Image 1: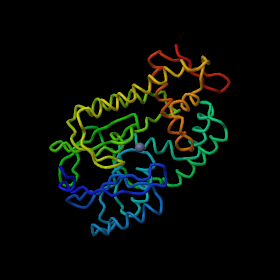
Image 2: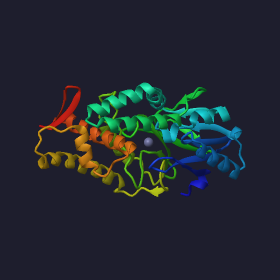
Image 3: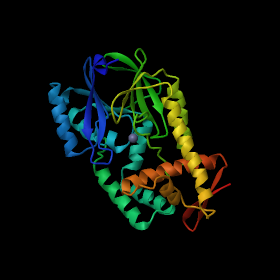
Image 4: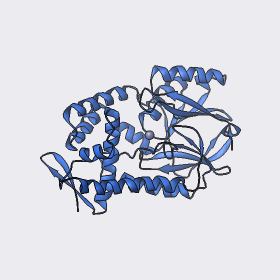
Length: 323
Ligand SMILES: [Zn+2]
């Protein structure tokens, strides 16, 4: 189905990051418009929004709902400002709001730096990672007005038709997607991306197993008869039958790569950072190092939970050894 038949219009927003854009969706409802994922709070985003609203002959006052799929800066950052301009409520999961509160302040940058050091990242690189986060967080504005909590499986009217709210984890806890059951159209945020696999985010502050969470999410999505995905990044794509299996396979291969790293190493113990540099040898810039480390630790955690690996804490450093 063509999204415009459901009155859904994509707005491609620029990002000053390696991933250079994020998709927002503008949806024409009966009594106003909804925006899904307003983007990052930069001047460039604002310029694109001004042009996009003009294209549809709208003003900010026509926006009735601001919907956020998950708390990551590129999706959530502008929601607070958008709310000030529109007076609309922001809709998302409780987890999204909680994670945003927990993440976007200097204390979380300090703790994240501490964790990176513990994982073996060199101090100079940790300093650059913190600098990157400080800049990134300036593009995330707090949401001070009304919030509406979305619940799993709840029905929501978008573009005058019924969608169902679907929850997912692994990339960002409490991510929400919207399924139009009649056509199989799925507005998925970053739950399903075509060209890149969504980063599995490990957070130092929880004992979670995000890779298993993502597998569970993928298996659930596989049962939903999704036909077309409107993703948070890249073009809309048809979800082939094997697509989700291939994403799972990709992560299973990565687990296998981790197991084999020890075969080519003389060391019994390796730091998470050493493992991440072997899994992602080309990664160098601070933002990519953070992604690579988070993804690595998520996979290590998965192996640890299955008693294949131990994570040993010694002298404020983390080491891993295969069992
Ligand atoms: Zn994301």
